[in-house]
Image (cartoon, rainbow, N blue to C red; front, top):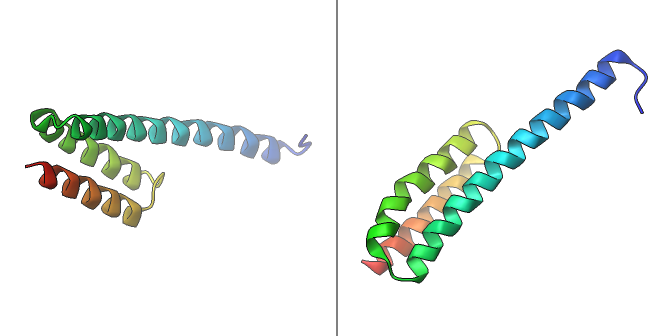
Length: 87
């Protein structure tokens, strides 16, 4: 356990940031799962409605630095390709 005041603060800040990052990642994964479920069931309308939501959540995660921007671009590209393959 840390004895120095600044080290104790860093532990608190790190725990708070870790919780925030975990929450954002979890939300992104949930939206992606919903989109992929719609694609799996060939539900074109639902997939088209969910894609902007997926893109927005990925972009927000990249903006906050939770996910790398290149990874976000790759995920969006692959999900768009799945959507286009349906139509």
